[in-house]
Image (cartoon, rainbow, N blue to C red; front, top):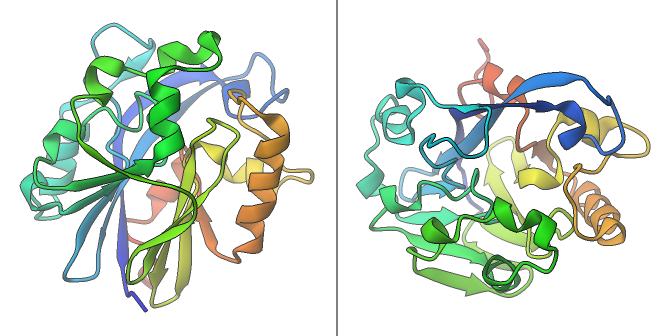
Length: 242
């Protein structure tokens, strides 16, 4: 059983209609939501889940990243160098989740094989711009197929819907398992509503809701992909004083 600590890293901000994260809800409401990646350690392994967005370059506006939100600087505040990261697990390959892969030259990168295939040839061209192929395919990946354990205390489960190759990551901590949902669950509101709410960007809505039910069945603490509230805690499980 693993015993990981989890550190959320705030690595940028997007300004969008809230309906981007809540399908058919809150039309016209504009919100700022964070780009988040995660640093995990059990004292031996040093792991990233997702790597955040590419440096702002005029695409995907409005998108900002301050100097202190640079992933290298965010890790430095934890006393970690990118070169020390041994494992990177990518929930899906959209630009805002895999844009800093090059920062981690010594890591093994895990992603679903189906996600690699989708990134290479997106089945719905309207969403093809979400994949930055110029960055994605600079990285050498270890493809996985389906649900599997990557190491003691860390496993992945397939959760398609937002993309066909999306995966969620389950990590054991001293307070129980935490699940990283990527963009399957963008906000706590999406998961806590009845019925649950899909992301505005999705390729298969039936598969999406099957994935949400699959996540619910894991009985984990869920950490959404773009929820500002998760940044209220500097570490998970939270310290007593937070």
